[in-house]
Length: 510
Length: 121
Image (cartoon, rainbow over all chains, first blue to last red):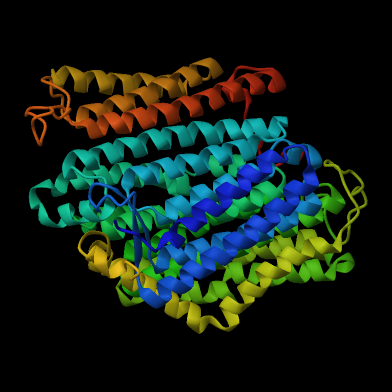
């Protein structure tokens, strides 16, 4: 009988599931749920770090569920790219759960905030680790329905309105994703991603059909990632729920969409790069420009950040579209740092609003004077987002811009630099309006319930800030990891061999 | 048969998009349901429409007798139907709740979250 080690591959899914089940058992007990959620987040972070260390040591890890050999059974696979994403998402999860202890109202916790967040993280883990196209769809649906619940939890009018847009467009995207998967199955006769990749390389006469299938994936995953033509649902919905929900959704979900695009378009859909990459390039350029312009005119802290997500998705897609090792490494670096920075900026806004009861620039001001530490956290995170050296965003943008200029993509690289400048403009605007200007006289109008400021809210932000600073000041190991991850993505033979051809005996403990 | 099936699926997609773009909340739900059904039927059709028999292996044979229908798309559709059922149930409750809270079934009036100065939350 085959006994598979590598069971640690399943931990990023099993740990949150176990935590969620425990949380459901103490449904009414808010304190116990908090303890369980915190312990689960710590275990999840530890298990992803362990998996990361194993992958660095031993290369790509795979496990065949139930022992069925690869093209027939279901494969779970971890390479460096998925491990980087997993670790970053576990960090964001830990920070947001810590933050929610002191910010989220009891009513929402009693409606199941923690179990839903944990199941969403299970879905993220599954999406990042699966090697099977249909399982990718199922995991995506799991995290999506959790996001639906999180956005609507509490049921205010704004939330329901935002959720209607979110749910409608995402149901359409899911339908299109299913159609795309069906098309790929019809062409390749398999759902195993490595097997499909082999088929895509070996069957020249099916190439046009693979291009058709890839269009379904560009549209459907592009919707979920909020890339250019179909991003309008994001700024319409992400600002409606409380910050403890916005932060985790904004930090993680769209990036998982970008992960799926990068994974599929490096592994499977490289049959006609001229067509697919130029479409991705257009999406990237327009996302950057429309995103920053949208962010520049908004007057609500969360809406500025929501639009800025769209522009950053553009940078991530730009690396994929340029398709050189440096560009993809730049994308990966940018995704990782953006997850941390974006979540942190949302958390800062939440701490401001907890005291002032509003996110509107009109009623905010003077935060720098009263809460210098909070303002400092915002300042550093914002500089990282804008890409000012020596902070983390700079390295990501530098890699992307350099890759663009080196491979002759002058237009997109120019757009990226220009969009960066507008990014600085809208972040300066937040800095002036929220932190620097005097508190306006009518600032007493609180639109949300307010609480006295709690210094401990800054703890999760400092945690994230530590990693953001480390990625900026001590960037070399991170850049090395992303370069290795990009190398692994572009040389997909290793991935395919790890799933299909590597003899089973090698991976069995004696 | 294949052609009729393909045209039917295409018509379903078209009808569902028309319904989704309609400004009435109820039609939106119907449109989303039909869209899910159409994508399921698409996956069914892509597994080839084979009429003969199911892929059950007889007791005295090692493989199923050709021609048999591909069971994988059917399994996929089963899963997709279950997921779609869950999502549709959620969407129906969401729309009902939104109708109660917002007091309108006209989607054109539900544009408050898109306005630049919507600070009422």
